[in-house]
Length: 152
Image (cartoon, rainbow, N blue to C red; front, side, top):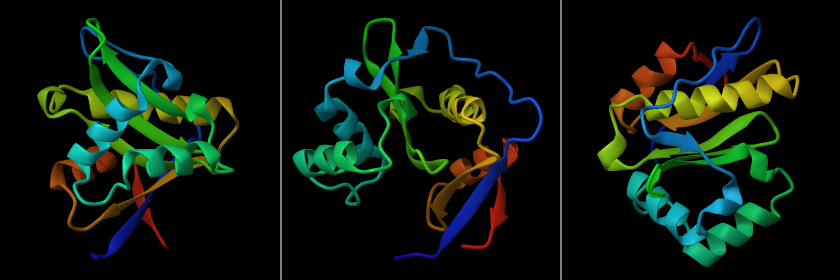
């Protein structure tokens, strides 16, 4: 397992509203078949996601689960373009964007949407962990959005 970085987005001051890519909008968690969410996570994190039934059970039974903090992004045709899963402890657990939708601002929109949700709940910051081995583009995205490294 590689070294992990803990990153933090301070939420002091106004939080920019997300700008969704054309034809993509956030949807309620329960509007999407869990198997589709799971498949997207497996694409984004190969070998790191539990089997679907285990993943879904663990997710929905976790004390930090709130479906309002687990946001799929859908195309106009109903296809799954991305997904962000957050915990009530002001933490982004997973962010996944389908390969066909990468590089179009969807990751930014999903993170900004999460920042807005947490700011509305009175959070002072949002954290996430990322592997040093993860996509350098993801780390650049986090930095561009004002996330800074904090002690683990």
